[in-house]
Image 1: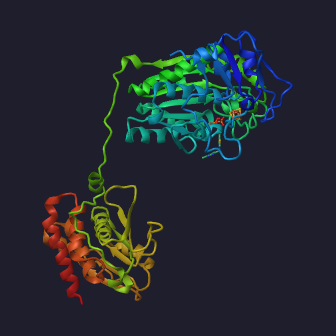
Image 2: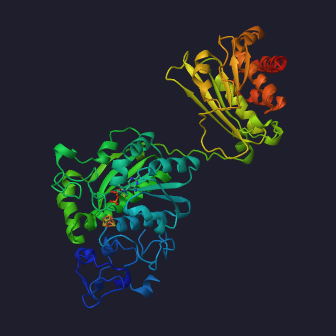
Length: 75
Length: 477
Ligand SMILES: Cc1ncc(C[n+]2csc(CCOP(=O)(O)OP(=O)(O)O)c2C)c(N)n1
Ligand code: SF4
């Protein structure tokens, strides 16, 4: 199954991924304040299709990693 | 090439060691800034094409001045707007290098406007990524040439007005009027579709260069949420709603398929060839000389040679400078002449020094050569006390008035004429200088003369002229 991993301390909370994700599986985590001082993006945990749109929308090189298949398959 | 995992491309450093401060893992751009997205797209293409080891990124002046923190490629940072000139040099010196110029709209379209125009018109085989965010980001949101009509910026607080600032520049349309560019397209970093198109354009532009097809430029409409005072999400919408109607997306020129790839050979510069170009070939006559061997008043001289254009005064100065260099000294030579090519006055200024030469200008010579009367009239008062004036009695009907300088008057023009041509007069002067000042050795000067005169068939006559000048100067003693 596809999924994304948000590397929390790289996120600047711009919300572009939240807006761009076609299935709406990313949200802003208002509970967390990261090292940069932003509420970071968070994968809702289900629904990712591995389309990669959030990766290409995100301006931060390290904030989002997209696994199109599950990690074991990908490796 | 479908990848199973999408993550930071190899062409971006894992850790940004060049970045000052504690945080070496995050890029410096504002939240939601388009620069980061474009960095990722370019880095991905460089990684996928396997060209990171032969790519040089050129950072501009602007928010992206720190491109070199991030890209694991060669990097150079260029002065404001000059990236295309730097790119030209890099590409021509080594055509195998993939040269990528990354520029903002202030950088490329304002201060660097002519730079990009000429590079595009020469059809340099380079790739330019042009970030159009309709504003000067780094300096705090001033108007750029691409600022939209009505757009409020720090320097257009009531909005850009057509009457005051004219219309925004459409760069890819402008460059498309030129014959040379191979590929020009405008894209936008907005929704998934347009980002995918930008990704494709980035790859096509780099491929264009790899294939030797010539100049490519991709203009990228990119959000500057800070400068526009909008949230990142609003800023994206602003590109779609406001920018795209004035800056339509699409290809404005694409002749890639019509072109043959051009892959020039790298010019290999061996040590031998460099010495040859610089005129340092070993077989030449060089002989170090110490200024202490020169009479005190002529050490480290500042020389002015003045006369009519056509009297060979520039060549005379070059001969002295070349000879000085062959004695192991520092030298400089600069010409100065009026707008008229012939018939006017000309002079050149020469430094010969065992010390560093700060400026090549000579305002107060200690050796003056005056080949005509206007030159003596003009420069006699500037000669340093204790200096020496060589003056051409063929054309000057008075003696120098100064009594605190040495003077050597000889009919240089008549002597030259007698030797077969008026053109030999300058080397007669050179001979007199050798004899009088003991600054330069005769054999070295003769070799220097051979180097600087253009028509080698006159070498024997000029040698006679130098010897005659020495003999005439000796007679005066
Ligand atoms: C020769 C020179 N003139 C002016 C500046 C000041 N300056 C720094 S960045 C900049 C504007 C850059 O704007 P842009 O190219 O749009 O890049 P952005 O910051 O928007 O990415 C200017 C004028 C400079 N650094 N050097
Ligand atoms: S000022 Fe604008 S262009 Fe510069 S980093 Fe911030 S958002 Fe990007």
